Image (tube, rainbow, N blue to C red; front, side, top):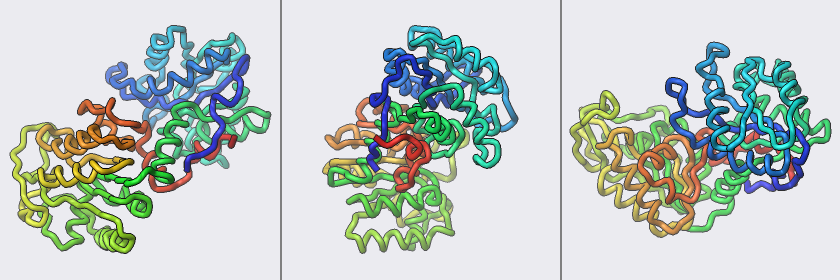
Length: 410
């Protein structure tokens, strides 16, 4: 899946109106941005287009926008931060219609190197609707604003939305380029190569709460990797499938047969499937999540009926770290336990530390594992931290992502 897509380096933006779909879905608290990772990730592409003399029109969604347009999900704070980071004014079009008269007039008045940011694309309900409904109309309005289109929003690339995939058809119809930005290119290169053409041994580590969320990922990675490590809440369904008592631990009873199938598949393919050999247990889930909690360690097949497993134990930490040591490629998606709690973060820290100390190419597959690596201070030791949770998972499942497919081939 290392795809040969046209990138921002493959066309000249000089004098052109270039619409760039970014991922500015940043966390906000009282109108202030609390994590700028996604804004920083977009800067190389924006700077390149500005330097080339493009007229740069940025768009993104923010939040879920359940109850219609509202100031709490406006992109105004993003425009403010971008202005500071780019060292030049980013004109914000506050119009809830996104592509209305204000946007059209602002684009017409642009000089080379100017940057504007459109309002939250999800303020137009059509953003997420199927093309046959209103999605096409919004996609065409976006295309009417520009000559060329660049998708740099990997976090949204798994959605066939108007501003991600729909717009490309109309840009292409009028002879424009549809390319990927530097962030998208990096994601495609790292994740694509890791899954399709890894330097071996290739170790994949999956954690998180539910087996159901990772069904296809487990299946796909078993065929690609040499060792598959399973931790987090999802491990208990596997342990139950082995006939172990798991107490009050999280379990997906409907997926027990699936777990048995996967263990059989690993054996048949000659792959190592590593499960926890011991567990950090407590009387119940911490409330609040970061509250002090009394824990003890027991072997994975000896969890008392009235206790629940909330993290991998010390022996498992060693086992998993050892498996990482000899790897040349490691992909990690999902924490090993309730990492938001200091007492229950030890398993996740041990895995992060093992990755930080290896010479292997280390790829963190977005979502909670990215948050954990950032919070625990290991981010700068990783080869690549994906900006897309859902998109990374679908990539690891081997699915084609609409936002990637929609870009022009070289």
